[in-house]
Amino acid sequence: MADDHENPAADPLNAQTPLALRQPLIDPFGRAITYLRVSVTDRCDFRCVYCMAEDQHFLPKKDILSLEELDRLCTAFVERGVRRLRLTGGEPLVRRNVMALFRSLSRHLRNGVLDELTLTTNGSQLARHAAELADCGVERINVSVDTLDPVKFKAITRWGDLAKVRAGIDAARAAGLKVKINAVALRGVNEDEFDDLIRFAHADGMDLTLIETMPLGEIGADRTDQYLPLSTVRAQLAERWTLEPLAYKTGGPARYVRVAETGGKLGFITPLTHNFCEGCNRVRVTCTGTLYMCLGQEDAADLRAPLRASEADAMLHGAIDEAIARKPKGHDFIIDRDHRKPAVGRTMSVTGG
Ligand code: SAM
Image 1: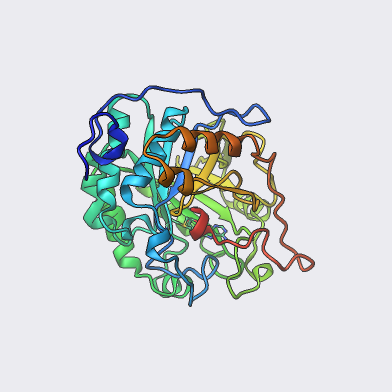
Image 2: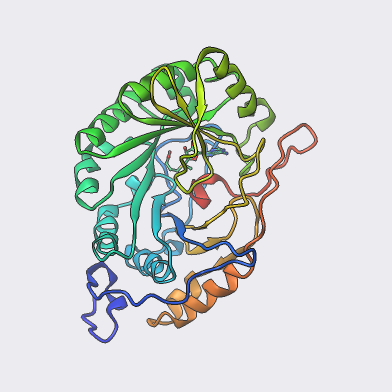
């Protein structure tokens, strides 16, 4: 890697120069973009039935941004006022040497220009990375666990091993990371398990968030069969648990209640039954440098070309500005028998969940 002191961005994984903050990103609806989710790989070691087809095709390596390019891209957003950065995927921890990216991005935490560096993971590789994540300044992580039944877990993830994931969660907690469990609500699959998931998460001081399935990508299955409205789930849970609404927000789309019996927090992400776009503060970048201004819309901007065209960041910032000026008001997900096609063609593993 070139030693170019004129342009620290040329070697971003070693860059130490403090950032000069630029014009913040404000979209046409006056929403400040302060949160970036970055899919660092489209690959995953699971094949969750609602997320990917079993024979999912992955992107050629040449199309994927290098770790240095990902760092440069994230840093450009941090310069523009992004305060929270979440690495996701695919499965972020299967990307080779991904810890080098965490390590380099952690400089923004130390420099005070970033409030949070975090990750969404399936937990399969967490046991070996937890301590280093904590050392990089990661404080809380999301781990996806849809069921506590090992056989069902295998059926949902096709390739996953629940014992490994639970060991990963234990390692994360032992390393001092705050863990939130995410579970997608699936009709006829885990709808009888929410009580157990609440007890499991809250017994160890972990928050739990339930997520509605979103119509993203062709997965070779009918989503009307999987879709379970969380309005129904919440009403049923309220028959057994005391759910006290909380003002608490993490800056994300989840709405939280406290479960009085456990003292723990329970979140609901309801893109279908309740549109959460109003306060949207986020954009997403894929591992190929495609910027999606909305999870549920097709419009996107290519940031890889301006990134690769020049070592300076002027073109990149120009492309980011143009894209944010087009951020739509919101998505309009619908799942019913008349809407069998996904809202967008790409799966969550491409855009980054
Ligand atoms: N591999 C990591 C993981 O498992 O958390 C990060 C990527 S994964 C795509 C992020 C989250 O998106 C997971 O919690 C997953 O369950 C969720 N997800 C994937 N496809 C979804 C869909 N169609 N609707 C709702 N959630 C989905």
